[in-house]
Amino acid sequence: MATVEIKKDEYVQKGSAEAELTQMKIYMKEFAKDRYTEVAEAQLKAEEKKLKDLEKELASYQKDETDLEKSINADEQTIQELEGNLVVLNNELTALSAEVISQNSQLISLTDDAARDQKEKYIKELDKREKKLRNDVKSAENKIGKSKDDIRDANSEIPKKQQLQKE
Image 1 (tube, one colour):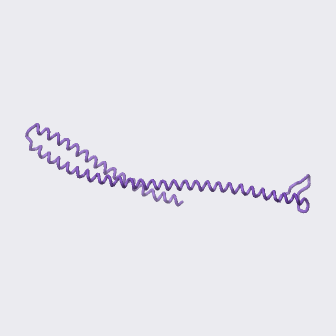
Image 2: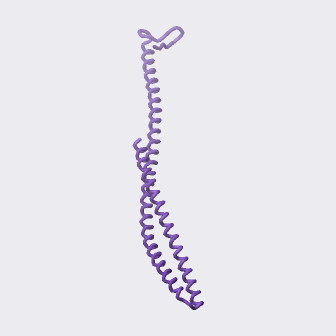
């Protein structure tokens, strides 16, 4: 209960100073309503900020998931391209190996030094090409392995991102 002093030792109460009592009730109701409104608005702003932060976090998780899916698709395409290149490289390597064997056989039967030197140079060039092809095959196989690892990692991350979105 509250009391309001109008003048010294004169208070607002029922039965006397009814007009002041009515005004006082109106003032107290308005004051309480204003206080309640301020508190409610502050709580609303706090909750809206929380919601906005959660929406940003969700959007971030969704973007991460989309990026992972794009990465998976890119790695799968890379694997397909490299596997196609591997077939070509292996066919070239097989043909080149056969050519080296054939040229070595011909080298053994040569007796002319000039022809022998020229054949050895040619075989050396074939060996260099064969070594390069082997390196290219190894590089393609390594890239395929890395892409498969990346796909496996991304596939394991996607469920984690989806779980975070649910929370």
